[in-house]
Image (cartoon, rainbow, N blue to C red; front, side, top):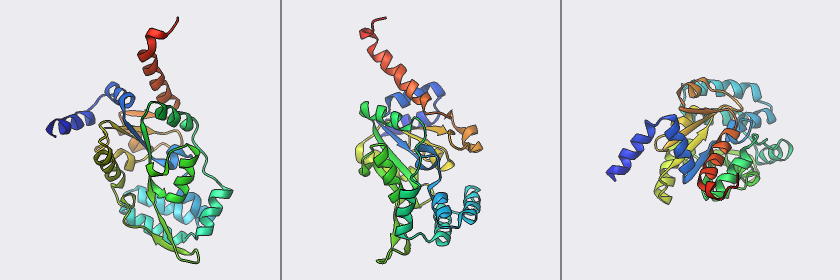
Length: 249
């Protein structure tokens, strides 16, 4: 047990080259969804669709400032949106989330290498499941918040017992995954502070700024990318190293 703690600590101190090696060796890669796997922020899109976009965007900005807990910010915004089941379904049908360039290819390449890929989101299960289907990630590998509806489809709150409903929830999910599957090298990829804070327990964090740049993450992340091609190149260079005996120059 002690050696594992030492290794995990060593990871958090790691240099860029160590982080790149960790990514190539990862047995699990966890992606944030909003502004990472997809270009939009799901809750903001839902708010716009329900006619309260500006008010919710203002609340989101305040929440990003860190004056509210994640759960309080989520509660406040949802109380304003009050999305019905029909509205959520209509949003997915009429404005399906748009995938970030290169993500489908990257996830596919990771899966070919037998890496387990997870989606961990503070967004909503119904939207995230739609995204998971698009990138061919099994629903059992999706962790997100669940909206609750009354029998007639009206908004009835959200499931406060989900780990992702809490501040620090992404880290809790990764801790759970390590316990459940015995993963040794877990990499978290995302655009926001909540993704960066999930490392540790994640062994490495890669900041993503391809859709939106969050200054704090850009400054603090050891490895910060704006294009998923960079991660594909890293995997390619690895497979060339592994197969160089078979390559005819």
